[in-house]
Image: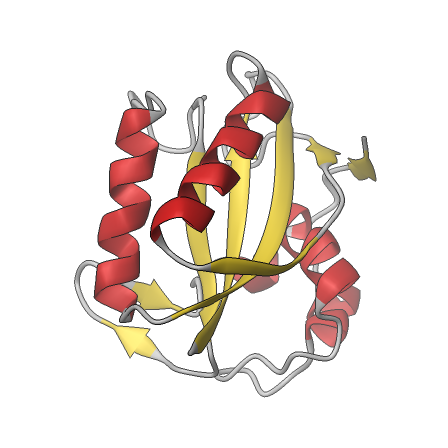
Length: 159
């Protein structure tokens, strides 16, 4: 079994329900939730003139390869109405693979660990709630050290 950390986010429609539906679909098709962070309200990152996001990080146990996991995630996002009209724009659901075990994957379609993870407070705060001591396989630093060194000043708080 593989251990994977996923970030779920939504800033359109019923954000909490969108995340809950995505988690149900993930458990139906991908694997089991080992642990989940609190729900967080977060300021938009990258494109700030949009509604605030709701975010949650989950750790799952599952048998899939990284590529198969990505395929399942994309199918779930499509079923839940994800439409990207602009980079970092609003969305009903977004599911990012943060870590896959301690593997490094670098293909045109998939980058694991998520390449922008160390620069995003909205990722690191919920990630540190459930995995503060997990070591980033590229930077060789724990999530808590990455958070301490993060220069992102966007607000992140528990809902």
